[in-house]
Length: 303
Image 1 (cartoon, rainbow, N blue to C red):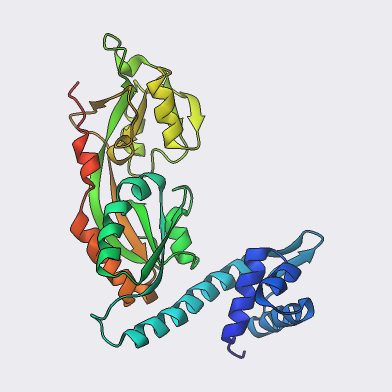
Image 2 (cartoon, rainbow, N blue to C red):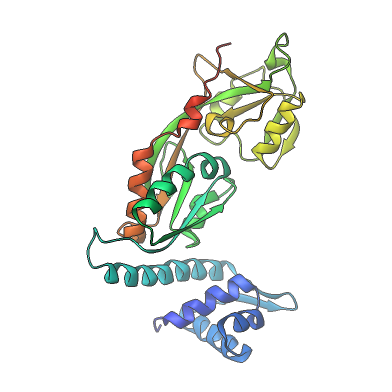
């Protein structure tokens, strides 16, 4: 097997992104036949079919998905090499793009203050933040597939997923969110409103032991929708404090003491990104920030 050349890696990435040879060729300024030939060459070198061709365009096979994930990480590493070499030393000014994947509440309440300090110290840095739902492979999957340099993720007891590295930044409790204008109603008797990202592996054991929690009457894709429904008096929900930092008026927060479920929030990176000056600088700011002050400022009241 011959090694794939950098231009071949970029062609695989473009075909995957555009879902077709013609569109990829247009993006790269090549002919469709040149892109098709390059993909066939890559498949011959790797010994696997990478894309399914058809009227729908080109869709990656399972082997193709793995190949493109490696291609993204290798291309990003080559780009970082140039940035690092031009920088000269480990403490030189950090420049260039920095791709971050984060779930919504972390992007809203953790990253702004961190990126403000980071870009203040390194004006040449260009952060790019993508909101990724923390379902399935979540933000860690974006890092593993080479779409992000760093992911803000919820971590279970095992820590970062296999193949990635990282660390916990802080731990936060869950609390009961319920309508503020119904003080004489036990919030635990209200209908449950839930969302798809809630109750990860770190809360399932606690959740299973609570016989007062009913089945959800409403389920939404986004936690902000859940909060809006609670503010309208439609029910209650069990939510982490980082999410509740953005709760609208009309939402009350009650502690789940004495032993509320908790989740760990941390960062994950690919091993090859560990020496990137941009990633190192971001990790330093994340560690210095700790838990967002907005989460601490909205303290749940006791039951």
